[in-house]
Image 1: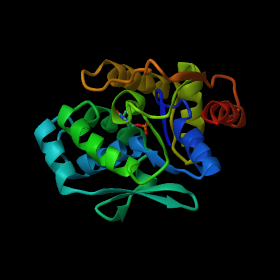
Image 2: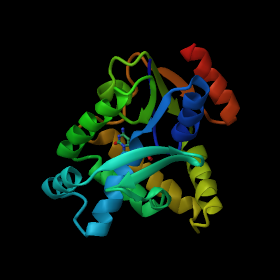
Image 3: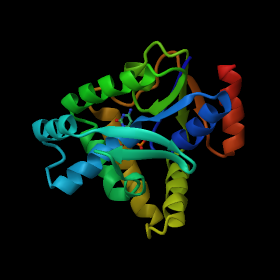
Image 4: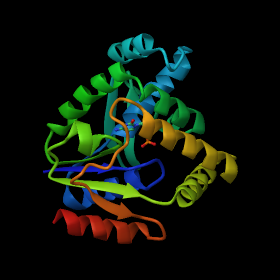
Length: 216
Ligand code: DC
């Protein structure tokens, strides 16, 4: 069984996908975390994020591992646990830039399909239903208003101790939405056969119930 959950930043994909996977006993694969791990490595190496050859080479020379931990999903780059470092606004912006590179997406596609072969999975991202798992058994397109998504991100970052302004984050989110939806390779799109779930004004539990009803 393969479940694909796509949608824009801040729609609640990882929170919801993680719980849905746990309830169904499936493996959870956060593909955004893979682009974030690469972005973290790019920032650390000092490479320009839009240098396709260099970023692609960096990815071939590294390894990305997703590991399930008590606290959620952990991410490792070349064996180093970088889970706590990949949710910063800087990594968010750079991940969206490296995700627009064709070669990088091609490499990620192979890695992600390999991970999906492990068994029943819930995979979340931007292009799962359209490109990575076009034959997924269930496809969900999760969305929410831009304002609500920005508010959720601000609350999330404040809880982690980051001092961010709502207006700044709203502008960054809008820019990331634009880049993710307008890129030429595998842009953020709702697959024709995806169920649209709008999470604006809904609790996490309500959204999970809605998705489980679609899956079962
Ligand atoms: O879901 P997220 O915010 O953690 O994703 C980080 C970035 O990675 C996002 O701006 C777009 C990109 N991404 C992508 O292009 N394709 C995916 N399948 C997952 C994420």
